[in-house]
Amino acid sequence: MSATTSCLPLLSPIDLRPTQSTLSASLFPIQIHNRRKAAAMEGLVKGLLNVALDAIGGDDGEDSRRQGEERSRSTWAQVVSSGDAEGEGDSGCRRNQSGARKASGEGNDGDWETVSGRRKHPQEDSRKRPQKVPAETWSTYKKHPDEQEYMAHTQHAANVEPTREELHDLSKACSRLWELDLNRLVPGKDYEIECGRGKKVYQEEDMAQGSLFTWLSDSVLRQPTYSRFCSLLDNYNPDERCREVVTSEEKHEQVAFIEEISRTAPIKYLYHYLVSKEIITENFEQFKRMMTSLWFDLYGRGGVSGSSSAFEHVFVGEIKRKEEKEVSGFHNWTQFYLEEAKGTVNYHGYILPRRRGECPDSETQVLSIQFEWNGILKSVSTVLVGVSPEFEIALYTLCFFAGEEDNHVQLGPYFVNIKCYRLGRDKIGSAFPIAEN
Image (cartoon, rainbow, N blue to C red; front, top):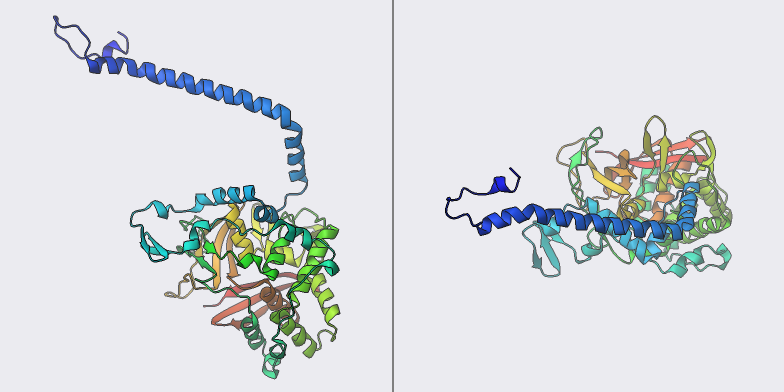
């Protein structure tokens, strides 16, 4: 008996006419079969079209692949300047969202929207899109530094001289730097983070339902020092085994970045501090050249010469290739935000503090976190959320010249240990904060 007749109901000997339900049951397998044939035919047509398109544009695709193999770099400038890349970053990051907008309990509260019991900022809808900078800005940064325009020097020159107490107490000097960071962002006003759930360092599973950053003000990455800082992030190959190739345009970006931040209060304070301690001579132009060399000169790491620099390691991040790949460095919040927006960073949650009852929240600006970068785990990294590029450069440079490997200091309300590792006598191997609870 066929599969169709086996599904027929029992009928009387007199009435052998099929019922409506019987006809439906009989036709259902045929309908499924027809749909499967149509789907298969559609897939075949699409496949043939793809083959034809590949045959037409195959050379371009192969060239792109070869270029990617030769130099695998971050593409921050492309994401920021390109509308298409912006869409890709938005799509790639949605996989980290918890779907809170689809949950019940949505409503309006003035300019804020209430979502799953929390208030959502109006800018949160664009939280996954890196802020765009006009394309001409990037070409300007690549010009010779003498041909570029910079912001005016800070007007707080009278406040950048270190006191006697600060010259004898590194913690007080670092605290003064915190006060001088006029471009530091304000939580809730310039950005918002969602810390999610806490975890131990040894726990590698993802404990966060969504992203760390929920939104960032449109104006932040357009500020001169932030914008120039971001233009440097795509100049590096994160693989420790690959020797860096620095172009003349990239060197211009480096010098111009140092020139820009040298006009800010934190860097001016650093200069006066080092002069007062007789670590450097009183020559501001020479100081800027020293800063460029300190942060951007290449050195060897992982057994390969010219594969790393202080800037790349501390702010961009690198990939170690030993028995298992691991993320090295990567201690900057701006880089984290941009990579998270592109979908290459997956936030796993914050690291639980030693003391109970002191869990971070959206206002916290010293945060220990765990994440994956391009699928590779960073078990713990402490970042100073919302601080300016000039502040971090000044802080780590100050600890390198005036401090030790461990520098227990106070930054505003936070007590931290600024770890500063040296390579030889004149190179920063790594520098990063560790929260002290």
